Length: 326
Ligand SMILES: [Zn+2]
Image 1: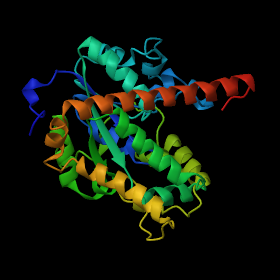
Image 2 (image 1 turned 135 degrees about the vertical axis):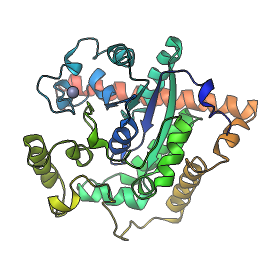
Image 3 (image 1 turned 180 degrees about the vertical axis):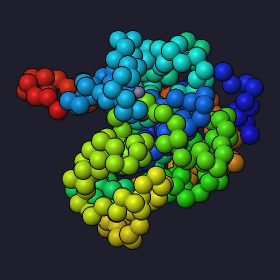
Image 4 (image 1 turned 90 degrees about the horizontal axis):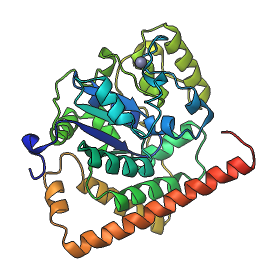
């Protein structure tokens, strides 16, 4: 497989997980990092550039009050990945599930300058699955726009990435194996049991992080209460779901899409399926892009990034002017 030669890879690398909210990125982050050479950073971009109130007082995923990783001033800088590699010399790969396209792009440039490799993985839900996840939290408004715009922007900015569908991650060991093989990391039957390792994951999805803590421990109870309050659906009994990987949305109920919306969705889904971890032709298709196509992609990617930066800047300024904190 082109580009997948383990020997040719730099010894240290960061895997950046992209995806919309509720895509399963925290789950994938901790599964991939469940390796003696791996380290899960979680949403470290939000720690370096906080945009919600809780980002300013992070709690480490390990739940240990004496864990000082995220209290070290070197951690809260754009050099966070280098800091982690320096602090943990046995770690050869980090997993970063910040998801922000601007963050990934900025960090990849920095890592490139440092001679540290990087990989892109996109985890995704179908519009129906995503719609259900948003409904579960009463956040239906604008769901399709978010889904389309994240994936379109991501694909405009990054031309090299591997996609994995959330439902495949939770149900198909072959998908995880194919993804690990592309990343050049080990995969074994217990790899999905990410709670076996002490994970220092920052922020991210509580339904994935709750399994890190022993049953009836205080972080576990706190997260369980938090999840029950957020969800509009009754939660499954704790005994049924504790430390198990399962697909949460199994209903067939889906949104009604117009013909145009359905076409737009289909285009994105087809692109994602072509990049699937198990699609043997995915890397060849990328390598086969001609110079004109590659140049166009670069230009479009830069414009999309510029738009994202401007939007974020405008939003932050508005919040500043209004004296509001999120
Ligand atoms: Zn920790």
